[in-house]
Every structure is written in C-alpha cells, then in structure tokens.
Amino acid sequence: MKPEKILIVEDNETMRIGLTESLKRENYIVSAFENGPEALKNFLLNPAPAAIVDLKMEPMDGITVLAELKRINPKTEVIMISAYGTVETAVKAMQLGAFDFLTKPFSPDELRLRVKKVFEKINNEQKIEDLLEHNRLLNEELYTGYDDIVGKSSPIKKIFSIIEQVADKGSVVLIQGESGTGKELVARAIHRKSNRSANSFIKINCGALNENLLESELFGHEKGAFTGAIKNKKGRFELADKGTLFLDEIGDVSPAMQVKLLRVLQEGEFERVGGEETIKTDVRVICATNKDLQKLIIEGKFREDLYYRLSVIPINIPSLRERKEDIVDLVDHFLKKTSEKNHTELKTINKEGLKLLIDYPWPGNIREVENLIERLSVISTSKEIDAALIAQHIGRSINVFNGYGNLPLEEAVYSFEKNLIIEAMRKAGGVKNKAAKILGINTSVLYYKLEKFNLL
Ligand SMILES: Nc1ncnc2c1ncn2[C@@H]1O[C@H](COP(=O)(O)OP(=O)(O)OP(=O)(O)O)[C@@H](O)[C@H]1O
Ligand SMILES: [Mg+2]
Image (cartoon, rainbow, N blue to C red; front, side, top):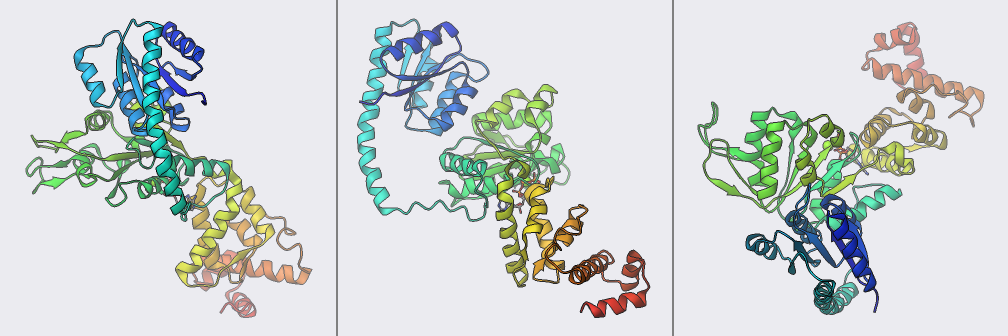
C-alpha cells in the first residue's frame, strides 16, 4: 500500500516532534507546522487526507484551522487534540466535522489506533470515489475555459490551477497585485467557476467610500438610521447571499470598519446600520488590494487578525514585468478586441514594434497594454502599426533604424514624417493650425503635407 499523508498543526515543539516521529515510524508521510496560517498555505497546494490539529494555538485557533481545512477540502478527516478539552469545544469540533477528539496526554498506541481508524474510513470512501470519478472522466471534456484571461507564463498557469482548486471552496481569497494586473478578472473567474455562479457576484470598492457610506453600503440601513435614510436598504452582504462578494481595495478600510468586517467574516452575521435584527448571510468573500498588507500591519494600519482571516487563500498576481513572456499574447488579444469593438480592420505589429513593447516596463500592467493597443490601433493609418509610433507613445526615443531598418531611405523618411504629422494632429485634437504649431510649420505647409499623405 502506498504511504499515507498526514498534516500536523501543533504549536508546542516537543509535542509536534513527538507526534511526527511516532507517525513516521508507522510509515506515514508527515508535514508538521507550528501554526494555522502556515499549515493552511501548504495544505492548499499540497492537501492531505488526514490532519491532527491542536486546539489552543496562536494566531489562529484549532477550531478555525479545522473549519478552514474542511472548507478547502471537505474530505480531509481531522483529529483534534487538546489538554483543555472541554465538552463544549469537543461538541463544536464535532459539529464542524472533526473525526475524533483526543485529550492530552495520550499514549503513542492510542494515537496510532486513532490514525489507523481515520485512514480505514478514508480508504473506503476513496474506493467509491474512484469508481465515480472514472465514470465522470469518461463523459467529460477536460476544457478549463479561461478565455478572458490571456497568458501562458508559468505564474499565470499557476493562478489557473489555484482558481481550479479553490473555486468551489467557501474560503476567503485575498488577491494581491499591482494596479492593472487583473485582480478583478481573477475574482470574477473564481466566481464563475464556483458552485455559486448561478447567484450574484457583487463588487464594492472599499477605497472609494468614506467610512459611514461604506458601512451602509456593506451592511445596509434601516429607515431613519441617519439623515437621508428614507427607506430600508439592503447592504451588499445581503445582496450577495449565496453568491460572491468582492471587496476591492481592502487595504484602504478604516480600523473601525476592519473590526466590523472581522465579525461578519467570523460569524457570518451582522446588523444593518440603525437596525436591531441580526442578519445571517452565506457569502463567499474575495478581497483584493494593491497595497502591501504586511507593511500596513507593521505600521499599525491593518489588523493582523483580519489579515489572517482574509488570507486563507492568498493569490499573488505578478506584475507584467515579471512575466514578459505574456506580452505578445496580450498584444494580439487586444489588437483583436479593438478591431472587433470598433469594427475596423485587424492591425498588426512587426517584430521591431514587438521588441519595443517587450522591453517596456509597463508600470500600469495589463490595463496599460489594453489602453495603448487600443490607442495605437485607432490612430495608425496603416494596417501595420509603425514601430516609431509605438516608440513615441511609450516615451522611448527610437533609433531611426529601428522600425525603418528594412525600408529604403526615401520610404523611411516618408513614413517617419507621416507618423509625426498624425501624432501632432492627434495631440491637437484635429485642429490644423494647432497641429501646425506643434510641428513648427505653417498651416499652409501642413495642408500640403496632409494632402500628400492622404490625410485630408
Ligand atoms: N491576463 C489578462 N488577459 C486579458 N486581459 C487582462 C488580463 N489581466 C488583466 N486584463 C484586463 O486588464 C484590465 C485591468 O484588469 P483588472 O481590472 O482586473 O485589474 P486590477 O488588478 O483589478 O487593477 P486595479 O488594481 O487598478 O483595480 C481589465 O480590462 C482586464 O480585463
Ligand atoms: Mg481592480
């Protein structure tokens, strides 16, 4: 029989080593961690069928770890261990689906027996699952379908695989990445792939609203709660019930609001502003930020406990600079998109142009690619967008031989002059004497040139 994997989460070092050693002797493959967040991070990519979890730990207690393990992989069987095992916590653990509850101290034999029992159950269930899965695979096409997320770089592939793994789990997802890297796109993909996709995806930009407004937008309000509250209003947590709530710019939330969010995330309940009634909600929360939350924690601006709540499933989207191999695909994608949107001919970019685009650092990431390609497609009068035009737009001085290298001198000069005139006309909003000023020529000369280049 192949060796079985088991996860241990125990903050006490002696205990952790003891457990690890005695299970290793039984040929189990053990991954041991001293706290919940670390263990969960690993578990996400490397799930185990069984886990042993200590109850009393910091910063995340064992009950929370149990709940998250179950959310990430409902089939994982968990044995809780504690020296403080009260009836109450044992009951809570069982309700959350723990398989067993062991009170410290226990003998190695006792541990072995319980772990053996867990795996008997798991293996039985696995046999049935295998049969079902075999059938399903025969019938199903294995297409993943991320048409709107372009990219083949390994970081993007990794993000696809995380989306696949987490879509159906209810755990909170925290998406971090620079502005324009596609955080919202990923959030929507998770929703679309989840079993909540038939229900709403509700978005709120936490950074755009002041504290009071944000509170009433998130939780709703009762009529008369404040001036202007003329009728009852449902908040986004209610509107997103059974669906997904996307909290954008979570790093911009005030300390008071952070406390309120912590509560609704922990207990799944809240009150409307000015309301008495406690409202229950079943919402999958996805957050995003372009801020460094770890840094905000150190600066005392973001609560650490909230961070742990939010970062159960962290997804970091690298900047475009860190995955330059996606640039060409993205450029193609946006050339196509622009031509479809504007019903215009599909423009192309030659090798020189692509080189410039690959070399550029893209501070605005994919959004900047999208905007630039759209702009270039619209202003380029030729089917092939000139490298010189690209250079102008990304603020690069182009070696005149770049982009014109293959042209005879006369044609290169013609093309260069034409581009300069187009650019001046664009900057001048089409007003000819303004454009003439930009170019430092007379309006009559400009007329002559516009005619020459077929631009009139
Ligand atoms: N991999 C991708 N493939 C295709 N389009 C993408 C990709 N990533 C992002 N985009 C597009 O780029 C634009 C910006 O993406 P999005 O709004 O998801 O970024 P963001 O990270 O949420 O940015 P911000 O931090 O500014 O809110 C959108 O129009 C989106 O469709
Ligand atoms: Mg965004």
